[in-house]
Every structure is written in structure tokens, then in C-alpha cells.
Length: 116
Image (cartoon, rainbow, N blue to C red):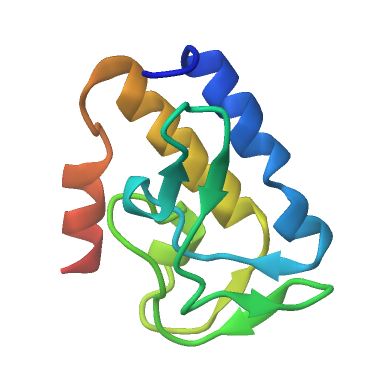
């Protein structure tokens, strides 16, 4: 990766918790929504189409986000409402970190079965 190693990248991603400090839940953190500058020194989050601003957790109906980056609490709703918090964004970052370390997505099969 240009400009640094994996640990530096995730340190920069965690610094992007700025959006959480502004009470924004992104709800669709995935590799396609993480932008790096050419030198690898800046990390930005893109695509705030389904994000919500809320000081507290909130309830939502339906599932918003992208497999396989959805947190378990968003999948196990059986079509009912689910509680949304910053933890879903942290879960997605964890999945991305695991994917970058192992070059595979272990949760993909489980998630696709849950959504059927």
C-alpha cells in the first residue's frame, strides 16, 4: 500500500471517527467507500447516501448497508426494526481489516444465508 502499512491505514480510519463525534452513523462502510490520496497519507470516507445524523441510537426498519459488512444485529432482525448505532461502522471496519489481513471474507457465506 503506498504511503504506509496496514496499521497506519487503520489508525487513519479510526481517526475518521470524526463523523461519529458529529453524531453521524455512516451505515455503509465498505472498501468502495474508503478513499486514499495518491500518497496514502489521507483517508476519506465517501457515500453518505444512507447515513443518518442522530445523537442517540435509533430504530430503523429494513436493512441498510452492504453484505458482507453488515453487523450481526442488522441481519438478525427478521424484517423487523433494528437498533442503529456507531457499532455497525466499527464492525464493518473490523471486517475490512480481517479481509485485508487474510485476503478473504469469512462471513460472506453466513451473511448471504441469513438474508435469504
